[in-house]
Image 1 (cartoon, rainbow, N blue to C red):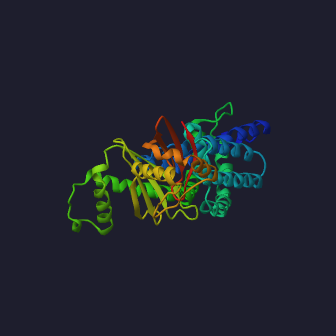
Image 2: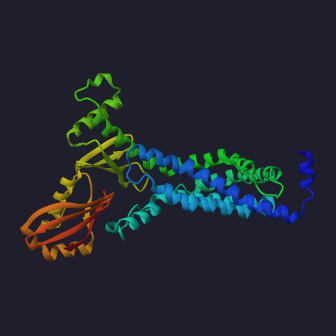
Image 3: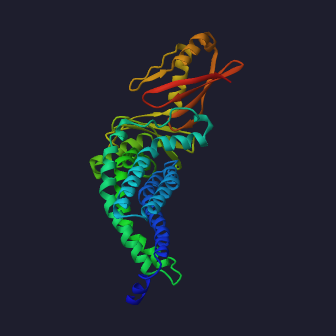
Length: 378
């Protein structure tokens, strides 16, 4: 080993720089993959375990953004002094943090609109003030962790050079050395997850527990055999037991834009039942739950016939063009025959009404507040 290192010290500096450049992007690539697996892979696994419909979207978006960004950072940091490496990784860490904060909102909205024409152009998953407040935390974490990331790049690239082959190419052992960055990737991932993803997962985890208790626990259990919190959840699940079915998928329909304290979850069952629940206190307990199909049919009839929707614990409004449209045609809606829900995707519900020889369809966007818009004759 000593003779190998001694020999390599006398190799043309240009050869060494070329190796470092190649090893730099490889280090960044490995770090980026580890970061995505630790942050969004873990999140995807937890979401899949609670039957979240789009559990994979953030993982996909992070894979095509964070991994290339980290590889680029490793390449840029490969040349120059330590200070350059430090600033490059501070910048990369900050950008990764910004991506992490925006993925559940603008990122998922863009993907949803690409995949579902019914929601294209609608304001989905608005970026909340609660997320914007975490930007300073992201910057601090990026600055602190950038120092050891830059140090490890220097050290691991040196080690990889010492283990390169006779043609000065990186070996499998050299690749393996870049795994030394795993603890730092886990550190970044833990911060990103706790800031955004965990609060957005918690409501789905609560409704999943309640659904499973309703489906799989025997009815009429003695509540004395359960701890108080589980007894409440068991009672809630059993109260909806007859409408539940074995297979279902969940979506986060809405959330409190100020602090994620409250959220709305939709669970769609394979028997056609759609369960909408308000979840309070960061996923700690369940609020009001409704049969979404019945609720929206009632709201559609109220809106068409009067222009007003009555909702005791929520706010339902219509945008000005839609309200004007309803006022001009209100007389037609006295012949209302049938109302049905025709499309449901998270916070967007399309409802169709049959009126004699024609139909009208409206979109209900959001959960609380909810906006009725884009009504049109079919």
